[in-house]
Image 1 (cartoon, helix red, strand yellow):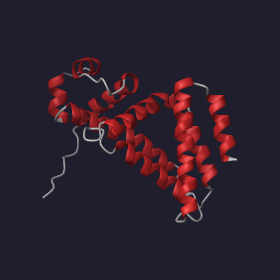
Image 2 (cartoon, one colour):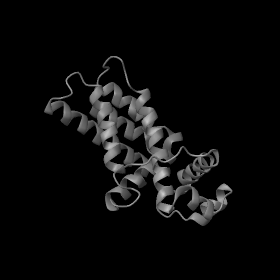
Image 3 (cartoon, one colour):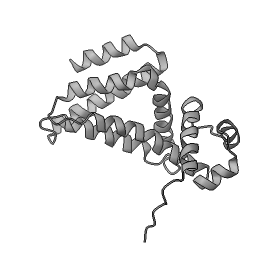
Image 4 (spheres, rainbow, N blue to C red):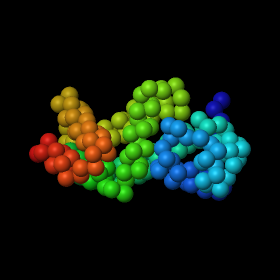
Length: 185
């Protein structure tokens, strides 16, 4: 029998939001509870009590980061099908916005860790984000179940993620945006 975790308390939610803000600027790979707790006005003991372990806290932070991504995906759902290129351009605009650089850096870190540490708190993070984005792109296609449509949305996703990695490495928004626009046609 599976048990569900009770809804988080107000204090747990507050600390999660503070820890999330901290992780956006400090990352998660080298997360240490003592500095985190000091920065957010808590203690390592309270964090361990609320989240069960450091891995539990990381899982909660990854879920929090993913909720930002899922909110975007929900907002980009359309009643009609504007087409893959239109949705891809909107995704690029969202991904490339300067105010999202901390979230995108965190995403890259979590994505990479998910690939090299598939059994830890990062488990399935990369796969789930691929599935989320492919599902959105699929919904924008008029004939999504053909092999050609699947290949095209996979290529678009690869383009967006590759351009994002390049943007984060170089901060060259003009060049990466031109590349995305050139490939989308």
